[in-house]
Image 1 (cartoon, helix red, strand yellow):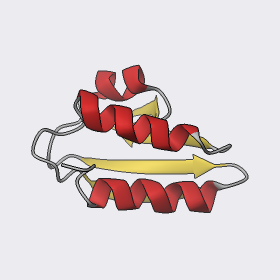
Image 2 (tube, rainbow, N blue to C red):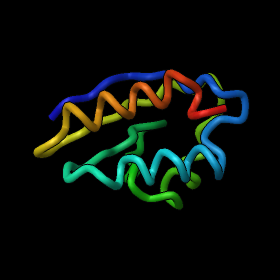
Image 3 (cartoon, helix red, strand yellow):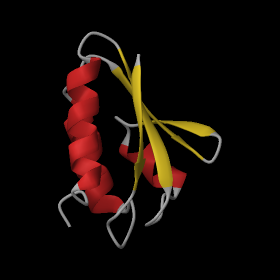
Length: 87
């Protein structure tokens, strides 16, 4: 299991489009990908779970990857979030 704390930098937070891009990207990995935010765990492969988390700009989250390709998944997740999820 690997994890990394990240800050959401895109102005609109994790709204529909970036959440969709992120969940689709994480879906290609075999490992479990979880977002920890405000004391709750959210499945990062689920668009609805990410939207339900209501993650705004400036929020600190922790991305946790657990499984066969966890390092690759965490690396891509961190790059996506740090780059503003394409916005």
